[in-house]
Image (cartoon, rainbow over all chains, first blue to last red; front, side, top):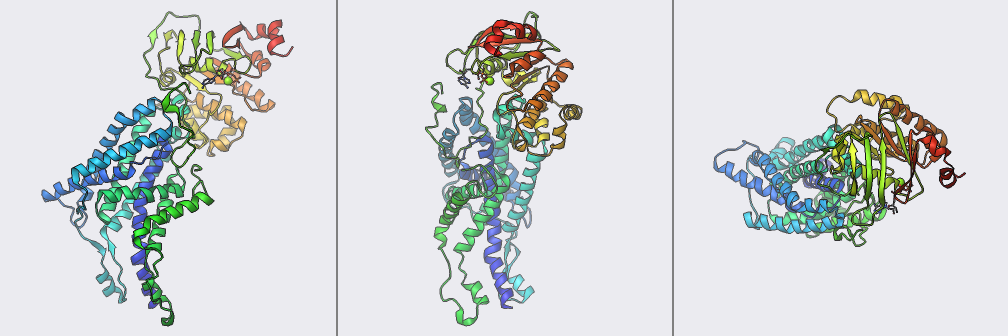
Length: 336
Length: 275
Ligand SMILES: Nc1ncnc2c1ncn2[C@@H]1O[C@H](COP(=O)(O)OP(=O)(O)OP(=O)(O)O)[C@@H](O)[C@H]1O
Ligand SMILES: [Mg+2]
């Protein structure tokens, strides 16, 4: 019984949150890795693009809610998501036209694009705050839980409850669909292959008749979808606050680098590595250990390795370890 | 390079924020239109081309190269003579400051490289001429990118020409040997069914046997009627199969003639063929 309770507690407080957080990081890291792989720079505006996509989706969600349009048990945000993606795509392609394209025509070195993306980040940051403000926003509706702790306790007769939020279930399902679609697109379609070809050898792609501007446009479109989905899922799961998206940049970059920059599979693995490390290291293990250890050994403290305030340090440390011992990341990406 | 401040990375080597692999060097060109020109004597001709890289000095000086259907034209010359530069100039990868490029009765001097691909020109560069992370088959598919029809027939032809590629079709092209890579490179260019094929040292780094093999294949391709313009280090062998030969020295046409003429020319023999 104690063992079961321990497992349930572990699942409830570590595994479920880490899986959904990991999925969100994976989606974010996929976008970063795509831009790195195809456009050849690290996009510092990624977190704020996520915030922008989530913001647009929230505005549409509020509008739909105002009209009484809902999806029943599912959050209305799901209905607003395609609109959020469309507007974000417009923003990204507009930004590319106005900003990045100039540097492409100059054949600017990628490091210059990194700094340019920093500028874009500040602008997007400003736009989001200007439109929706810096505060927390609520936009989740529909059923809150797929499995609630009380129902689970009644059903299982255990002391420990297991809760799975709708947003968590949605996050995982959406991520699986998005990743499957992306992999199919990159590996099976003509356009996807041309993007990989451009990523591999720009000049030869040109000599094969692949239009670089097309490749760039498709990249931004995919990135718009990935960032908006990731931003909305994160917002549904936690809450929407522009600043948290900026902060997400660190774990997202850590995920992409840990997995191996430029490798989509690596981005996903990296997302889960970072998420699980962050959650397990900042989790107070007292409860789980209390079930597992004999009474005499029961810990008196919280058995929390690191306060949640320091969770971003975890990303940093893992990043360091990977860079020291496996500079190409877990999945042979580009050596860093 | 050439004083463009955007191309100065100030010594950045940090691959965690930038990816250097596969960065393009072909300068961006807006690309103009092809204009009809008087039907010249050759199918493809780079006519008295003068030009260089970016804003740098002229590398080519009134250099002329031409090729006709069914012919193999070979460009030879010492290292740094401007052979690759001449090929790039014909393909629109650098500014031709004076002179013209004519293809099939059209002046294509203003066209961007990608538009020349659509016009039917195929080019195998001297270096980085395959997609290393793509499979052999995907390399060929990318060669056929501009084609919207069914290209399986062409792929079968390429596999017939280079049987080893069929065997390795699902292997990443970067995992092949040097000679096999050259076959992928030529195969990729053939996939467009080009009207003219330009090869920059297709036999670089290839063993003598494979080289002979590759030359045989090139002759086979030429027999199908595709004009081939080729740069070669192995001057003697290349001139033996050449209908037309150009010896380039310091960006200028030093000698021009049929392959046989050049092989027999005492001057050419002395300075380029080693006696
Ligand atoms: N990208 C470039 N930018 C500036 N100068 C270049 C560039 N590429 C080549 N050059 C210069 O142009 C000249 C001719 O080079 P090119 O590559 O055409 O020689 P090549 O005849 O092909 O020689 P090789 O037999 O070694 O291939 C050289 O002096 C070289 O320094
Ligand atoms: Mg050369």
